Image (cartoon, rainbow, N blue to C red; front, side):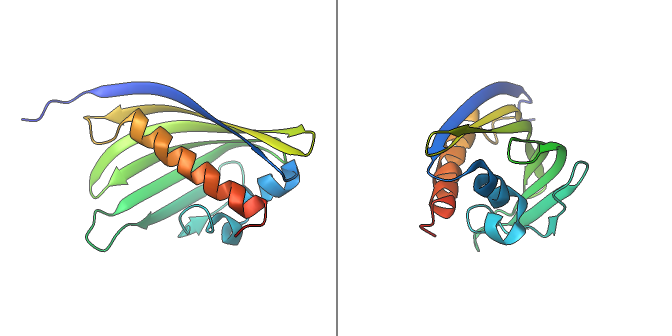
Length: 147
């Protein structure tokens, strides 16, 4: 039998974008814009209590499933959601994520904080933080007009 354990971790990723908080918020709230920097959603209900669901992966597998529920939305200021991430039939993590948008001179400071429970070594906080950094870089390209 494989060892079962949970690793808890919190990480924060910060970026400053040359775009207004309204534009950055829209990049999360509009499904077509979000698909440019995140996975294309099969279900996208951007409202408190709403769900975002996507499933996919490389042709050789595995299939990753992201299943989120929006907990709090403050337009142009804050997004809070909880989500699970599965790899195939295996739940690899459950997290709460908070996105803060702060107006600064010339743009927006984004503070992304994730608090996660990572299961049985299938995923790690370090891998998730790296992936989040890549996503926030892609978000920056979208809101700054490069994509």
